[in-house]
Amino acid sequence: MFFGNVERPPRLSEFDLEVPEKCIGQHPAKKRDECKLMILDKKDGNIQHKKFKDITSLFNKGDVLVLNNTKVFSARLYASKEKSDSKVEVFLLRELDTDLWEAMVKPARKVRIGNKLFFNDKIGCDVIDNTVSGGRVLRFEFKENENLYPFIDKYGNAPLPPYIKRPSKDSDKKDYQTVYASERGSVAAPTAGIHFTKEMLDALKKKGVNITYITLHIGLGTFKPILVEDLTRHNMDSEYYEVSQETAETINVARQKKKKIWVVGTSSVRALETVVVSGFQITAKKGWTDKFIYPPYHFKMCDRLITNFHQPKSTLMMLVSAFSNKDTVMKAYQEAIKKKYKFYSYGDSMLLL
Image (cartoon, rainbow, N blue to C red):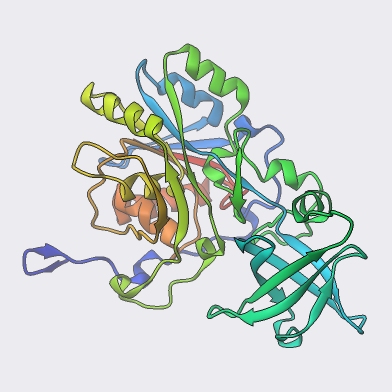
């Protein structure tokens, strides 16, 4: 596939694949590190089947493990409309300013500018604007020194993705979260990292692996479908990221020493590739990124990729395909279905090397 001397991107339809319902993970693994692990050689397509906990044996001293430390907050709340018994689902997306939030509401047609919503007798909000994506801008009001975050933590529901066909449970607040999450801001988990346990991370540190963190707050755009066949015409939603000076120095030193950079999750990859300043270094930076990675793409800051099995025709699957190649990844997904791997957020893991 070429345009003159330039390889053209695959079309959207080339990433289509039927994933049986029974393969879509509805519940987390009983033990995080006991999930299945597919190891895929991105060059020759060779596949090995392991447990996730086996991955620690593949690291060498001096390698770097990059994790996204974003923390999922319990973004799904329920309110009542003023002068009405109507119930409204409020899905908080991001805080725009103090007490000012962007949110999705359901049913949207019944929530208009000027409406008041009440979550209890101490917390309410005014609907002050619409957003271009069909959401609402809400201004929260509190009585008696109340604060929204403690309320979210106590009464909010874990923002499970739409392909998990069950109500969220209190246990999802812990399960749909990495053990190293520290920076609140995501409405979807960086699920590639869910499989790590504190014991695994301690073992890697003892082995001499340098563990470092980026932050990228994942929004609902991670589930946004691509609506155009021509991938060059798709626009990603912007997401906030931070790459610290410490992380940049850790990775740059490892690069100079020719050590491997292991990156956990597509969100971490996008953050690192956003801050590349040359073919061999990154710089400390924070801001917003809408970087869309699809084939063909030359990765500068990722030697090993740990990820989950993603939705067909998604931007996540395309990034994984760019790291290997589309045909190899599609064959690996078909093998995963045959071997009864679990897919998506509560699914099993894949390592590409």
